[in-house]
Length: 144
Image (spheres, rainbow, N blue to C red):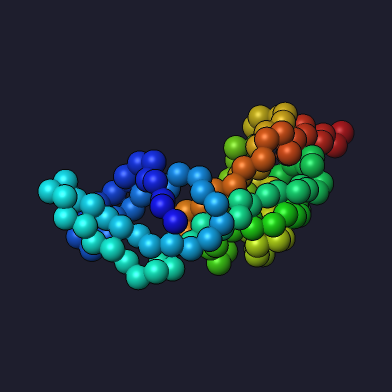
């Protein structure tokens, strides 16, 4: 399997961080070619493309500060072990109650902006998964 790197993010002693292009599921070898032409190759299976993650439902799809929201899907952590960040309508949630590859529960934070927005999950390995127009912040209630 050949992995084409889309962009190099960072190079520090002992570590190279890159963004890989899309690919088919499966494992492969990592080969690093320097500007001088020298090549370093990993053992077979050092890299594995995973099936793309999917968010299948956000329930409820509307709410406000303090709403408990369940997000269901598959591969939502992209190989990571936990969700490190979740945003509803662009606003970081107050709490990630629990997270795994198929189910994430969060508590919505306050938002000054009403309306539809994306739900974005970032896992502890940096993988990001987004679904458009899956969450709507409602106007805060007013008790008179």
